[in-house]
Image 1: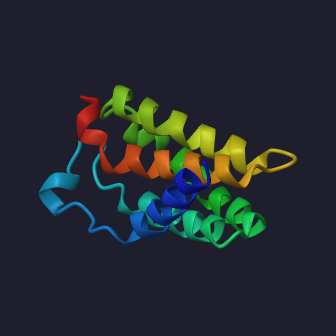
Image 2: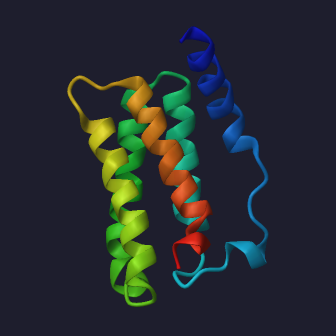
Length: 123
């Protein structure tokens, strides 16, 4: 069990360092989500450092900007929008839980980043 936890921690620390999708790969019906991705990576980095308080504060920026962009994004592809929106909701729930579960926060943020990066598979 300790080996699995160590592997998860290592993968989560390396994940933000992986190359981003190229412009062609990042294209989706929703358009450019790089601004949202940046906020998720920032939030994830706080969580990886164990600073869940800062992660909770930073994820509020994602919630606000995503909600403001909904009228423009959702009509482009409701299916893709809902997939990312649900992943955001799970991350928000984990980061706002009392008490917070650090592993659940990290997992939900990794899944959110994956949803943003792999949205082309949601079609």
